Length: 110
Length: 113
Image 1 (tube, one colour):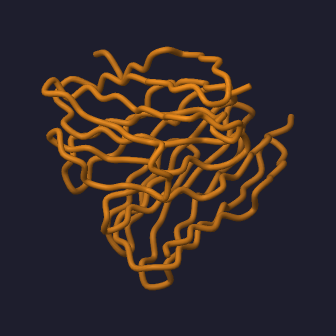
Image 2 (cartoon, chains in turn yellow, cyan):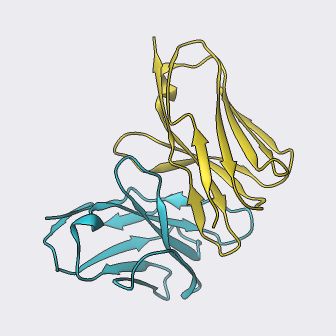
């Protein structure tokens, strides 16, 4: 059974600092997604990573995928308060369902 | 451009009752998926429909059922509600192609008392 593990689950960081969120998954998949969820809100798609070595960047966030290591990372550069949210990685299985990690709750403090 | 719309936004039911949740996908999207999100956890896959046919089913009991209509809207039905069914139910639509991401609605908050 496909398992998706994120770490850390909770992350408190100061504005201006850099940090990386890790997403490990247990079976072969070439489709990995990152989503953001604000409290009480729905999920917003951030990145779609479709191949080994894929790297995508949007603003202060950069996501990468290593399918051989079954690892994706979400790197935060020079964090700002507006990035405070819960971040989920999700892996699409051959059965077309999406398996989500437990989420990383990020708090950026001034 | 209208996003994924779900109704109702909030719902309170008692144990043993039945509930129907509704979802309208983004125009042009043929795939609809349903997810259950318990507070503090990631969404869990319930169903996916594409072109009115079930394409995938998660590990949920038979009390959960769904269907997709010719206009690609969808309903999720839950029978014999249990307290543990209290959650945020998210509907997501996509084009259904290989690299198309899911676009989520705002969800229906179901509380079972």
